Length: 247
Image (cartoon, rainbow, N blue to C red):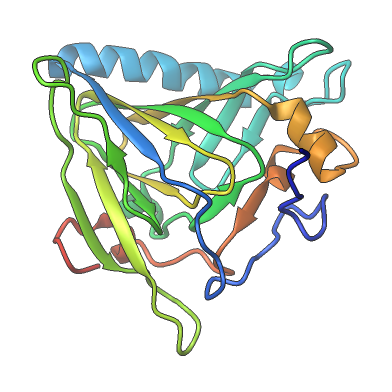
């Protein structure tokens, strides 16, 4: 059975859906992977971030390749480099994201969803954490004797909602110097905001080409595979506060 389209306009790179009517299609699953000494985490995160920064400054990565794909891109959460792109017979891609520091930039990314499933590994270095938000509770993996830590979770009110609309936001903190995986089903809300200078994401999209065909997109446009649940980027205070119950 063919899944219905999510987008109203397939090639719109800033499509906004009605927050009041939106309901998640499932739950995000979070798996704590490892904690590292600060000097180890710093080297790992900086190495990945430098790949993205080098690509951003390189003409070959910032102009269309033979397939028309620009490998160095910019998302709301940070700069991105497509390490691996889809091709005939292999429908996935993989990218690295070098996070912006939300506190330094003064704004947060918006709550959003994707037209296909995602798998992300969030990696933090010293003096940096990632605040992950969603409109439904996280499922957190906890295997006794194996899972290294349990991330802090709390709720607050989603900021900047339209008049008369109230939504609870579920928050999860990726602590400094740690790796945390997150499985994001198709059509499930989420937002990422790094607080601090040292954070990256390694993200795999297992059905990238399938999404383009399913939604009827005119071409491979990663931002067109995103649907936003807010029109404006909210103030940094709404994603940098770590006080449970408040923003």
